[in-house]
Length: 71
Image 1 (cartoon, one colour):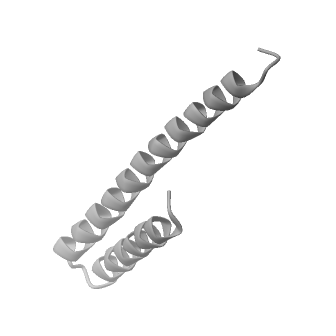
Image 2 (image 1 turned 180 degrees about the vertical axis):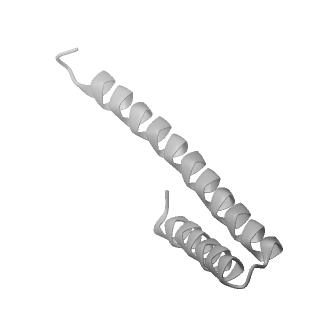
């Protein structure tokens, strides 16, 4: 996952936390729900990026092993 993606996802998550907090503080259920949704979207994006990273790491490990003359 690129640093830009990480920062964007963290920013969206933080924005969601603020919205949720403000919604709680002002009894605004709509804003609170929007904040929870923003956090869920950010977490889903992060999970997807982690899966991609794991796949790349696995492919790199396989490639490195196949390049090793001992195997």
